[in-house]
Amino acid sequence: MHRTCLKLCQQTQNSIQTNSFSLTIFFRKRNKMAICKILFFLLALCVWCGKCEVFYKRVGDEVSMKCGVDSNSDIDWKFNDESIFSIKGKSGTKRKGSSHIAFKASASGDTLKVPRLETRDSGNYFCRQSGKHYTVRVVSAFVKPGPVLLQSSNAELHCDITGDPNTEVQWLRPPNGEEYKEKKQVIQLKSVTSKEAGQWTCLVKKDLKLIVALTVVGLQTTAVNASKGDNIELPCSLPQSVSQRVVGGRWKADHLPKVSFPTLTNTAGEGLHWNGNGLSKVNFTTGQLSTNFDVTLKNVQSSDEGTFVCTVEFDGGVSLSVETTLRVMDKPSGEGLPCNLQSEIAKLVEEILGMANSSICGIADALDHALLKLKKLKRCVDDAGASPSDTSSPVSSQDISPCPPDKPSSSQDTGFAESVNDDIESLERKKLNLQIKLLENQNEYYALKLKKIKEQSMIVSVVE
Image 1 (cartoon, one colour):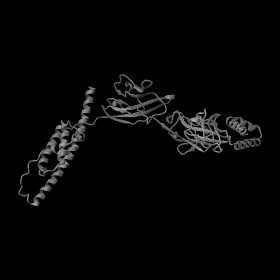
Image 2: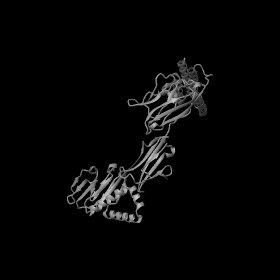
Image 3: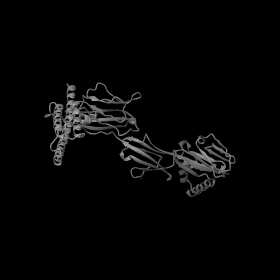
Image 4: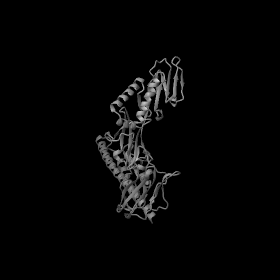
């Protein structure tokens, strides 16, 4: 009897799932009330046979099914008519069947558990002793060609119910979970923009919720300012890797018809890379590329000022372009700078060191941090005009020039004289610290100026 019920119910369910169109025509031709009575009878028959329990599960979920017999009874589980387990109730002996489910499923009492569900695990599960029958539908949600999409490209959102392609699902679109008009398992998105970016939700039978995150990206750049003679980068990049494969691309400047730029090429051996020979005006990265497509424009002049266009091409015929603007300015004048900056700084250091020795000496056995700082600064100046922060060699108390020996003073026995001397020394120290600060600032300034002059000299020599 159970087998007869099972067969009738299975045929009814398959007929409803796969022949919905035929049923619709049938409804139009026959009395609707009579058909409803027949369907109600079949539904009741399924429930009575224990057939109509359907599980919708995500990929990776676990499903549990009960046979509904005493734990001491023999139990035989099958998947799509293939044996999973045969269990002897009295001895507990379990024999694995030929189904792939047997290699990961477990049985405890009359309960069968199938973990880490895959799409191929969708189908019919049957316990022979009770006639209990379950249908498991494994659902997977994903985006084609991938979750990171280019602006203006097309995409497919999938909420696939394996073995049941006709069941409707409800899509909720970003940003506020608004219901999407189509209730198909696969929906088409044309020419995507940032409006489609975000979290898409697929609801299956209002019990199962699956989420797909969609990211839409475009090329990025910024405007560039440069001084005459500079080498300047023209920026062009993607914020992250995308699902579509880059197949080509180029830079272009309509106002510079004589300037040649490299082209993007993607080959099996070298991957994505720039291709260009004999380019006198443009430098580029010679290695494999991913998301950065910057190039360097050399020795820019006023005539280079204008708009530059970066274009990147992808699989499927999609291409993105972005414009950046270059503005070229005159270099700042260097008039009024000392001819020999290093000698000027050295002269100032020696002058302050001379004042420091005469004003601070007299404090016995005291490590003078001001003098240590000066000595360190002097060492930086001696080292080709480097800034104080560039030196790595420490300065010790031995670097300080020794003070002349103390001479006896007739006022040493008076507290007033000592107090006056201390006040004078304190004022001298404050004055010295201020001078040191001024000197450090001057040294930093001169070091930067020296660096700039050297760069200008190198550029001029290259141009000549």
